[in-house]
Image 1 (cartoon, rainbow, N blue to C red):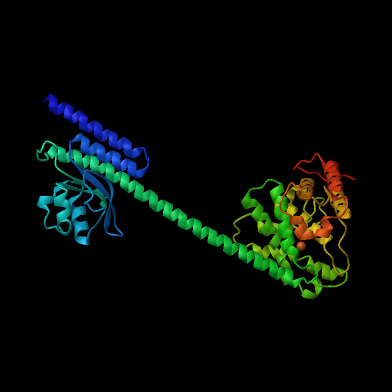
Image 2 (image 1 turned 135 degrees about the horizontal axis):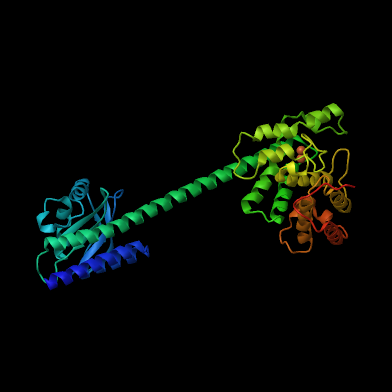
Length: 420
Ligand SMILES: [Fe+2]
Ligand SMILES: [Fe+2]
C-alpha cells in the first residue's frame, strides 16, 4: 500500500513537472527532451522517443530520443490508413506486437524490433494527430499495467499539447510573415503609383518641372525635423507628391501661361485643391491625410488663403507643412515671368510671413533642417540636390539661418496670428 502510494506520488509529481515544462515555453526541443526524460524516469522505462507529425508531409520527425541508438530512423512516413487508425485509437498506448496489421508497423517492423519498442502512443489532440511516443520495455521486465498506461496517456497528452502549441505558433508566424510580405508589396505598389502620379502632374507643367517631387522631399525633411515617426514622414512625402494632383484637370494653357494669368484663368486654376481632394478622397491612403493636404495647401494662417479661407488652427497640420514646402519651391525655381529668388530674400520672406502665412514652428523646422546640412550635422545633402550646389554655397547662408532661427525663437505649436 505504502509502495503504491509513493509510486503514485512520484508519477503525479512527474506529470506536474511535464505540465510545468510545457507551459514554460522554453526551447521546443529542450521541452521535448525533458518531457521524455521525465516520462521514462517516472515509470523506469529503458528507452523511448518522441516524434512530431506533419499532416501535410505524412511523416514523423524524431524530436527527442533516449537509448534508441543510431539505427532508429529520424523520419518515419505514415500512410492514410495509419493516420486514420492512429486517430481512431486516440491517446492510448498500443502494443507493437498486437498491431501487425498496421502498414506502419509492417514497414518499420525491423527498426521497431531491433530497438525493442514495445508501445506506440499516438499523440492525438482534439482529433488531430500531432505526434507519437515510442516506448521500450520497463527496467523491471514487468509488462505495462493499465495504471502505467493511464500515466503514459496523461503524460503523452501534455507532450501532445506542447507540440500542438508549437504547430500553432509556427502557423501564426508563417501567416504573419505572409501578411508582412503582402503589406510590403502593397506599400511598394502604393509608392510606385504615387511617384507615377507625381511625374504625370509635373509633366503637365513644363515651367515647374519636378515641382511635386521637390515639394514631397521638402515635406519629408520638415516631417523628420519635427520628430515624426517613419510612417508619418513617409505620409508627409506622399502628401507633397500629390498636393497638386487637381492640376491634372486644369487646362494646360492656363498652367503653362508665360504671363501672369487673368482673374478668370486664376479662378480656374484655384479649383485645383478642391479637385485634388475629390480625386484623392476615394483612395485609401495608408498614412497621413493626403486628401486634406491637397485641399488645404493654399490656406494661410491669417485666413487669406483659399479655397475656404480657414484660420490657423482650422487648417490641417499636414496642409501647413505642404504649404511651406510648396511656397519655398515656388520662390526658389524659375517661373516664366519671374526668376528664382536668392536665399537671403527667401529666408526673409519665410520669416516675415511666419505667423501670417506659415506656422512658425514649421518654418523653424525647415530652417533647422537646412542649417544642419550646411553645418555638416546632417550627412545627406538633400537641399543641395534639390536646389543645386551653387544656391546652397552662396555666401553667408549659415549666419542668415542662425539669425532667422534666433529671431523666431521661442515658438510654440499653438500659433496665433501676428497683429502687425
Ligand atoms: Fe497648388
Ligand atoms: Fe504646388
